[in-house]
Image (cartoon, rainbow, N blue to C red; front, side, top):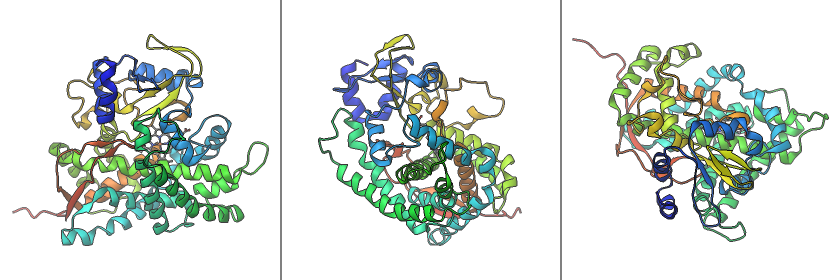
Length: 446
Ligand code: HEM
């Protein structure tokens, strides 16, 4: 695709164009001219590995790409940044999300999820259409807020945070589409962005200050931050705690519910997959409730989620900046240039996934399947910035899907797969609406 065609197409349909460029270039590193900025696009797993892992030190998250600048304006320094403050945050927060610790949360989260899914019973009985994205955001926050805040904030407050966050993620779109526009030029969305950041601060700062006064001995994220000490024995600054807390809340709920929103159109268009998923959940869970001991048997459910993360990776671009000159996939990269990785495009490349790359097929993740490159499927990134929430997400997602499908069957108002919308995460272009019917528990055989 000639470079001069790339820009208008990227603005019209950024996601599709990234995949087309990846397929058209055969995965080669290509440079696209986006006005003032001309980043390199990186698709091939070997090149992704070089940027995220082997040479991570020379490819930091620069703060002059539109995504990181927006992120920095929201969360300042800390876990989503680079350098010393990132390292300190990662050291404090990392242990909270290890598999062994996260596994102890299953029953607490299962209970929170079951209680929120109860809220859908009335709507199912009445046949009222629901916006599943909005419902999932409610269900995810009820599960996650306990892990983050113990009982220091209410579900209503959590929902107000989510609403503000919704504004933040979508109001970033104009800046993502016009990365060359400097910050001092006002753009649509800026005012809503700043107002939403203030709303989040107004809610979280009093909760944070109360936790600093009385850290307690809880192992929730907030109490852990409030007790944390630097290697020199100092408390983290209030600013750093605030930045980490806002970062964590921002990346956790948003990513989780957005990914899960794609599941329903994907299933509606793959009836055989849906049948197999229902059969596994019926067999393993029955009428519920879901418990920790069910996990090892929900193998197909996990394959479905891996495939969902392949086609709909919430983090659809990962921007970096070459701090020094390098050669990447045979192409010379000058110091100071931006380099953009796209899990979305790599995950849909036909050279890696075959002619059915865009088809939803969980069999790709069946145990014993042919091994593939570590970075052919990297929805959680990799290297030193690898997602901290991978285990937490897989746990909460299995719980949500199993709880939901042990109770209901769903019928989409519009069965077409929605288009994508440019935002910080990979969002559907329209709400996904459905009605629910109660699952028939024990069909009578005659
Ligand atoms: C489906 C859900 C999720 C997806 C697809 C996802 C994806 C990602 C990706 C791609 C990165 C790497 C960013 C980069 O390299 O610049 C990342 C980083 C991160 N994720 Fe997630 N994430 C998800 C859920 C979560 C959850 C539930 C948490 C909560 C603990 C979380 C916490 C983080 C943090 C703290 C980082 C930054 C790590 C660092 O820079 O050291 N994520 N995530």
